[in-house]
Length: 134
Image (cartoon, rainbow, N blue to C red; front, side, top):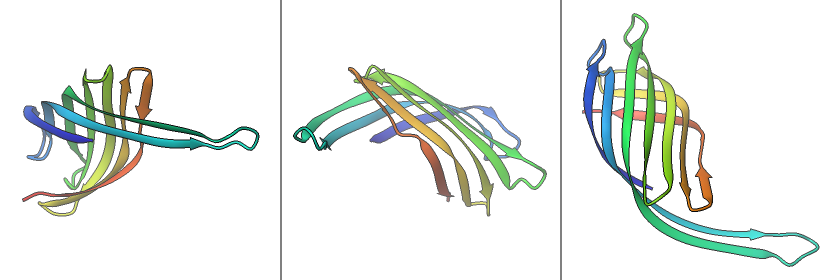
């Protein structure tokens, strides 16, 4: 999965890092599945599938500093689109800490999902991120 997008800040926050951004872009998927189902009473079943497609999307992304120190923040993401697939969603939220002007870390949850034909794929779970800006 590869993503390319552009965002425009539509609302400013309390600090330079805070705000609400509206974006547009494209996400390319390259899917390659090779699975084997094993059972003791029947022969193994091998399933293979491959496909690739590109979806356009719109995105809303926000970040807000919390507390008086200016170090802690919460952020969220909501992305929706389609085109090559029937439906694509990506959403998540995190809480982070800004160690210095250019370095931050965050912990959160993210759930990108895509539906194409009769196949629905979701990859969700905890995330950790390290940010470095210059």
